[in-house]
Image (cartoon, rainbow, N blue to C red; front, side):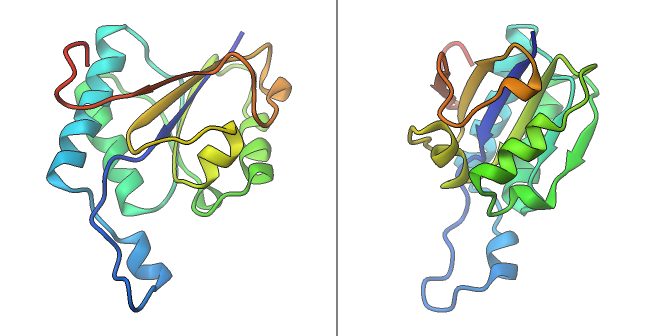
Length: 160
């Protein structure tokens, strides 16, 4: 019974408002608060002894930083796959990526963006929010799945 974790990246620097450029958007780093929150995500996983079998991460700087900081705090090695399709992913893209996971992975963490993740879940995700979904198998995943547990993880949380 696989477990899927969907994590919206931590808080990033604001984009330039007058000249939106995809290359610039991809290179936006985390804020200081975002870095602290991303570290708290790793601590949240470590305290609960939850270690995802695989991390699927968007190629944007803010998602990579979120994962790197969380992984450092988690203190466990796990494979990472940078997925180009996670940047500006559609619901169909997310389904394709996750349903394509090999059955030997019993858990996976996707570090992505909004509106992709919120559209998929049918629920708004703030930055550094983590959704947990228990599945029968990877192919059983559907948009707007039932039984989703969502938690926003912040650096000041007592249990993070």
